[in-house]
Structures are given as C-alpha cells and as structure tokens.
Image 1 (cartoon, rainbow, N blue to C red):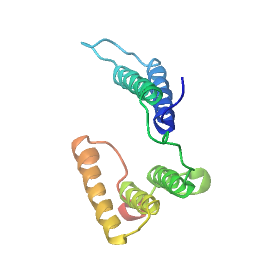
Image 2: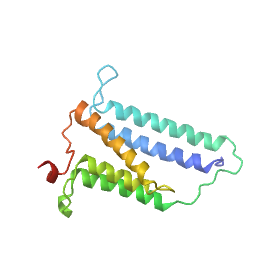
Image 3: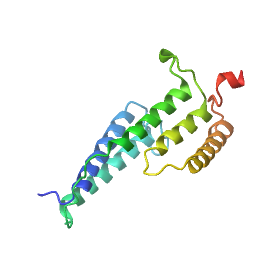
Image 4: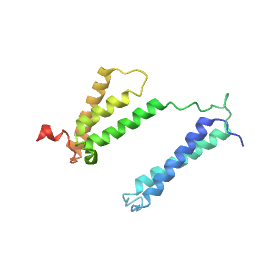
Length: 162
C-alpha cells in the first residue's frame, strides 16, 4: 500500500506515539472506573482517544488519494527554536533555577517573557499586540489559578513582594 499523503501519514504516526505514551504513563496511577475515576483515568482515556485518532488519520493517508501526495516540506527551525526557548524561559522564570543563579521571578514576568519570546516565532512581530495578549493571559491566569483554584504560585518576584 502506498502513502497517498505524507503530511497526514506522519502526523498520524505522531498522534499515535503521543497517545500511546500518555496512555502508558497513565497506567502508573490508579485508573479506577467510569463511576469512580482515579487520577490516571483521564490521561488514559485521552491517550487512547489520541492514538485512535492517529490511527484513523494514518489509515486515511494511505487510502484517500491526493493530488500531489502532500509532500512534507523542509523544517523551519527558527519558529521551533523560539517556541522551545519560550517554554524553557517560562519554566525558568516561574520557578527559578538555583543551579544557574536564576531566582524565581513569578507568574507575571514569566508569562510576559513567554509571550514576547514566542511572538518572535511568527513572521511579523507587533509589540503592542503581544503586550495586550500577555496582559490578558496574566489576568486570566491570575483569576484562574490564584483566585479560583487558590494555588500557591508566586505571582511577583521576591524583590517586589518582600
């Protein structure tokens, strides 16, 4: 059987791999049943659904004919680098990295850094729009995690709050 769409075929394989990894990782937790769900139930079901979705996409890529075979283009490394760097910076700024001497800067600064670095991955960078987005993300995160869920997350750097 020939691959009729390379894009769908390989994205289906990735979906299946991630789904199987999540489902497998979830088995280390108590799964429970539908009536009494344990902490592993949701990730297990999500992993199974993702793997099934990947299987359907992979099957479709081998059956449904496409005009040009939907070849995979070359990787664009610049956006990938910025997105990975944004996530690393967010983690480092939110929790700090004592081994490198980076103090925890809190949620607000971490989210602004995340938005600013990730926005550089796009083709055009508009500072005003990025700052508005970051402000909305900070407000939504504060309301969700601090006010509603009452999580103990450092909001501001220690040198501001004392």
